Image (spheres, helix red, strand yellow):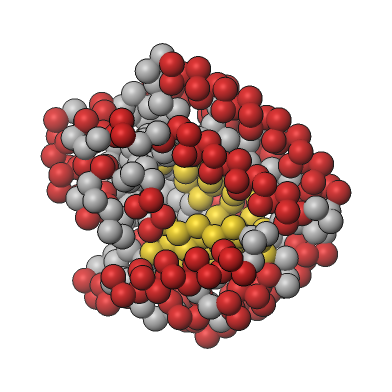
Length: 364
């Protein structure tokens, strides 16, 4: 089933399309354009590295998701990470060292990985890890942050290192954002965007899509306001219910259809911006991309997991290389079971198949 879809070609072309979009978005900014032009050369070299591994029968995903801290300065309502005890106070004792993250970034470069998403908790709470990422110019690091910790120090770091791209979390307008993230958060985000715009720093936003905010956050009017402030990318993330009490926020097929239709309209209207839907866009890739097929997740403690929403691991990066982690028995079982190739109608496939993943983990 997986052989019928050329994942390497799809993902490689996807990376190149993103780069072209960034160039369009930044052609008036010499500093941004200079970085992207150099990155394009690195990206082609990275593609060749991935292809060389593919010849040997080893698939190297072009993307990684890395949660670098379990700490966060906010207490957002319905937080998936806090509910699953992957984020919170006192959980950082076992977190991977900054030195090991530095090694992993270097290993990723040598394997041909082009994008590493930095998440948390709040990733900006680990400045030393962000500084390590800044040094690896061959990789773009979208940093998924609540934006409240972006001070002059971080503005200067982003300005000097254009491979670091802040992705600011927002829930819609002021009332919607403050309701979930705390009073005053929206105002801080607006100040942050203004600071980024003054330095012509490319940034994006991440939106948790729920039944309550779907109409607002997918509207042209809403994005146009952010676009004028310098925003050039949007990542729509479908809300995953943490308890039965929050299941009413989870998008249904109706909301997923609204997201898909409105996202297509936004792509046509704002050609120099990037719009990605997770996991919705996966249904156009021949199935779920988790477990190393298109990406995998490294948790705070170094565990190699199929996906942030499928937090199960049998392999730890504290004890093995990145290449060895890709050979995880759990990943192998998941891919051989063809669960990833099941019809993808929306929502997180592995989250929905949690029982099956747990059984596979028991077999490892």
